[in-house]
Length: 265
Ligand code: SF4
Image (cartoon, rainbow, N blue to C red; front, side, top):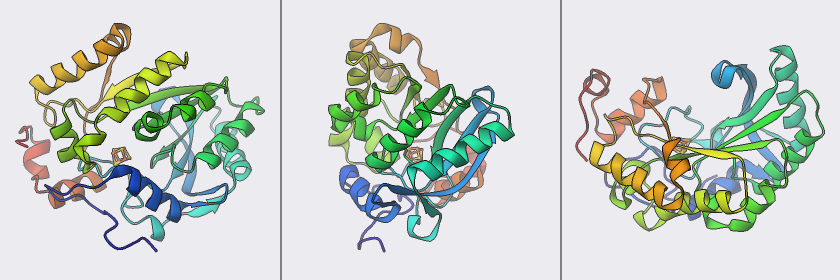
């Protein structure tokens, strides 16, 4: 069971230490080298990709599309060893005739031992040519050695998704205290320094991120590397069921939001 005060859906003004939440979440979703997943399937994004849907994240973004396993990780999923998870992802890849794979849903960099062992298994599987690691960048920014370990895998391509361009907006949107704002940017710098294959995305949907903040985010990225900044992938917020519930809980009217109004934070 999660410890008292474990954050669930975000209320406006709430904040927490995301590294602590990462640890608390790992206590629930990791067991030795196993990790909780809810399903294995393939989907059309990235031109077709096999996916293991993991449980648990260290942020609580109010616009998050992930199902409610993010908020109640103790209630969802089953534990899979790295080998079992790899076999299930490869099975989905073969069934849907795709060559790419990823873990999605929660934050893949939680349960480090699981991820690294899973990637080792993936390296030996000819059915998968590319493994896309989607991350919010927190844990990679907190520990450079994690980035170094990831760059040892030939099939890994990292996609870092930034949530905000200022410390205040980062805290308001994710619930993670503003002093951790710099860590995802630090992850970008480490990935660059270690020669990783990666690109950066941002939830820069103008209904969520004002243009002035978007500019700051791009400037901050350009200070790290102009090419990375120029190739920013810009995300759009979609009305998934969980997104609508989280928005309402946070105090944003989803009807107005998806009708085109921008937010005031
Ligand atoms: S949007 Fe991503 S980083 Fe944010 S809570 Fe959802 S899964 Fe975690």
